[in-house]
Length: 261
Image (tube, rainbow, N blue to C red; front, side, top):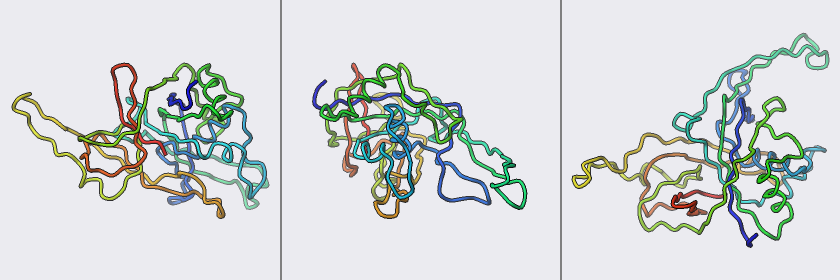
């Protein structure tokens, strides 16, 4: 294993619920995209790191994995222009301690068939990273990973890919295949589609841009989510676009650009 290894694996489930801290008319909301804190929890489950045990203390998995660079890409064919299908489910909690005045009614949004390609930049010197590589490669997990709730089990076996990679500094127009943290007004950086007379076809065509404010970690004192503005798009972007931590990946003859954060 070289000093650094960039891999990806696919995580998918029948349902998912990445709880937002806010509500909408009594309905518990879910983030649409898998975010970094949730992904770190799944990685911790895979290699058997403990979760939350005591209020006011970081879980073991977060302390040991929070500096791991990750990238996230919704899987093609499972989303519509960046959005996964959603439904609202209702629960009735009849236990006495849940609500002294009667049954507790809960409404909760739910993702349907969410799936993501997750990129990890692993370090040879880190024992947790080496264990992640071995377990993901073999499809093993110490604890069952899930998408936000125990009943939403996720699976990943047989999907590991490994890439040649290098830092990417744009010298020409480019597309980003993963989610990325946007800086400034993205529409000002879009390359306009045009018709090529030599090719007799449209070039730089695009169809969507998806935005979502997602957690990237936790505030060290408040222990609340720290958020960033993310985008996911098929737009071609101008070479002058300023986006940090981009990497060019090669797998066989294919190349792609992703962001790790």
